Image (tube, rainbow over all chains, first blue to last red; front, side, top):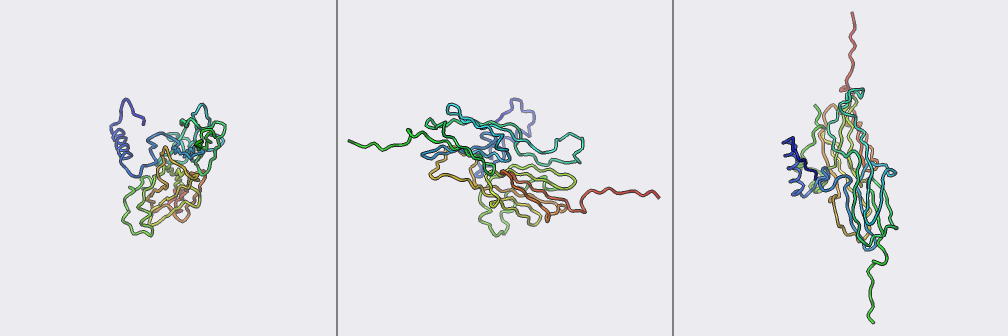
Length: 150
Length: 135
């Protein structure tokens, strides 16, 4: 998590501390802070045949997503634009007021390292309901084999 | 003033007698939201990745708006999780609406995991220009 070197605002600092405490002890972690990584939140898992990566990236044009796999590093990058009215811009925008602004906005990039047996030639990506699912096949040579005893 | 600016504390009405009391007690993620108000009403956008249209449950009851949704991921068989940042399969968040909002005319759209709610103000609450007649 980002830590300011020069804590300018004591209350913001307390707020951050409280949030971190809550995330450490709460049974129901909040999705809000993305304390552990950033946007998009990632779940990673595997089956004997595949490695599955789920990126929780709602509201993104799938065409703007950039997914690369290079030497075992899977990179998911893109950007998300906010359609909130610009604050401070007094021009027009008939007095729209932003009351809550928690959703992520801007460029994002997340990198995860895949296990050694992931096959960079067999990658499949799907985007559905705001979740990007990247499926990487494991190499056949790495599949468990039964060795017969002579 | 408008209470949608402030979200409710999640535990405020656990004791409420609700039909699905047991479900309500279950842990859920709090989705991040944006709330914007202009002269015509309030627009709320919530990030609900992984939620299909039929898994979204919106309720307005006693001046409170509850967004509840289940994450439905197509998980392959035998999946073993190795890293989890989204650790729960449900979102829930409640807001208190104010009386000038017209709850009958709430419009909802769910697109790529983003819910957009448009809550118009009741006609009597919209700002009106009052003409001054010069006598």
